[in-house]
Length: 108
Image (tube, rainbow, N blue to C red; front, side, top):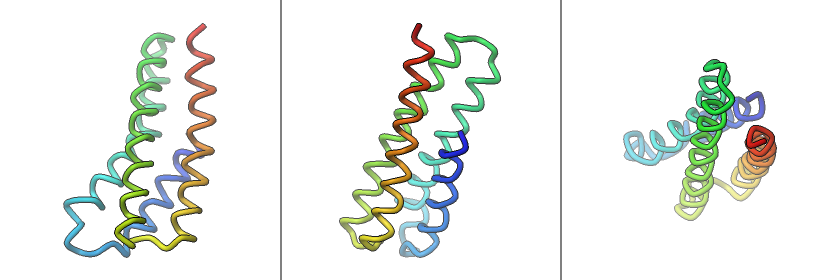
């Protein structure tokens, strides 16, 4: 969840500069999806059930996929520089790899 938390903080920092007309659109959606990743990891873990944890990890993976799309969309709209996009995408990818390993480890 620590890498997911890093990602959320980066997303919040990056979206501060998004156009004001996106505050209830893309900015909100991207922030919500990013926040959902560590929140679902934490909530699933707190359930003290392997099946529940696995289910919440699945939701976190779905939210991370949303983040991927929103970042690509924001970059396409030129709301992010190439440097900002690459930094966010690298962190998102690392988070995804770790989350996928955790998800698979809970499948046994």
